[in-house]
Image (tube, one colour):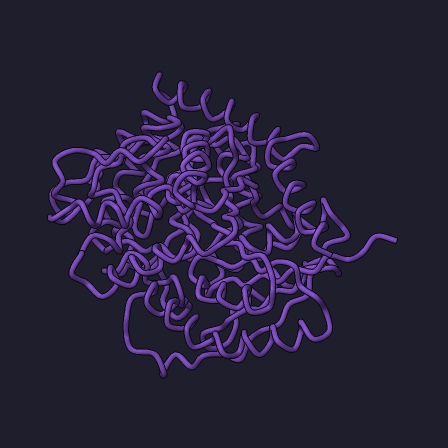
Length: 469
């Protein structure tokens, strides 16, 4: 009889960090049913309903345990990244206790953690496990993470003031202003923390990346070649791993899907800034007028404005009606032409719908992979974190997206909005992007087939773990 292989996974706080590591776990146990996964989930306050509903869909060979919650009042006021970082630090003693009690009953062969939970890798050595980071980010971003300590040593100015783009091994050149938002102020505490975090990446035995060889062959090959020389952990591309369509959709979702059913093939632009993105009031107004000016059909997920681009990343704004922030008369003037949905929409259902022909996106990596899998070309509108780097990869690297120009106040003006929409939805350039995306969709689908590059990579890992049992 085949022995069961036990591994533990640790996401960090927030729905968009929980989902990728769970999706990877599902893919893993589906391909290799002899693997059993226990997921230890750190929480800030009480877990969200969205998180709970994802957990209800897990197969029987994935268990989960919520670690005791960290009280938000115990944390100093800070950015979402700092809150996540501190929650993880506060959760470490609980995680140690949970791992200790599990290993007494069950020998674990590997510990897989989210990048924000990297401190937990210290426990892998103690409990005699192999250690891995599961990165819900692109290989290009991982490449930057390994390069940054060197960049930090060599650079005396702020990165945004560098005269030339930075050439990361195997990657499309990236301008300093397009790097991670939390490296843009080098004197900040956040920057120093981030640098420390990156320096500790090398302690892992491997990094699992939610990407695939054919999409990012440059950075993946460069990382693995450099790794053997510089002691960088092996990089394992295991994607694209995305959420699949589920039948449960709320009333809002049903309304937008039946509206899409009535539209022509590829005629609608889907506009959404992910689970955490928010725009300023001024930008909401410019975007609204731009959508109207473009004269194209659109489905827009609107959130209440906020001066912070990631205001809803760890919280929700359920008490505010976002529609009140739209320009006066906008909903009446665009009736029939567009549909505006407050706060949330069933993204996978929308991107897989035949009538959607473009996606104006914040370039979060989950959304990016979802659009690749469904073959929808992009307007890249990055807001925070590593999204600017993704926008460069998509618009200048693999050429499946158009990036609008921002003015000196970082606003995309209405005329520019209308211009890029027309360009994507009807222009020659849009056709080229559509064809590129069609090809990328094809290779993405092949990567996760039985003999695909990512399936082979996961099998390599499974074999390695089996040999330890």
